[in-house]
Length: 95
Image (cartoon, rainbow, N blue to C red; front, side, top):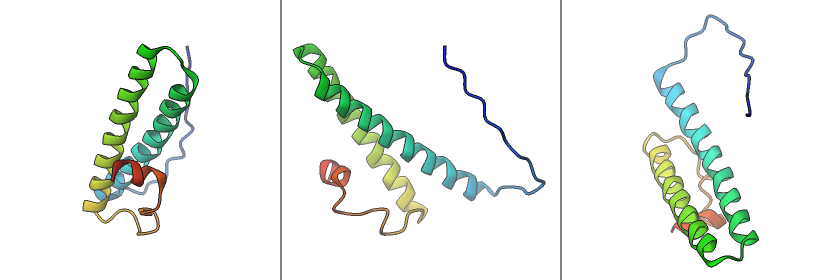
C-alpha cells in the first residue's frame, strides 16, 4: 500500500476561495496530464484486443476530462494564453 505524507507549513494567512479554486484546477490539470501519459503508455504496451479497447476508452475519458478542466480554467481566466497553446498535442487531440 502506498502512503503519502505532505509537510505543510501553516502561516496565518487565509487563502481566498478564488485562489483555492485556481489551485485545485491547476492540480487537477496536472493530474489529468499525467493520467493521459499513463493511458498512452498503456496503449502502446498492450497487444490484446480487449486491452487495446480498454485503453482507447481510457484515453477518450481522460481527454474529455482535460477538455472540461481547460474550459473551467478559461471561465475564471486562470491560464494565460501560452498555457493554452493551440499547437499542443493535447489540444490537437481534443479540438
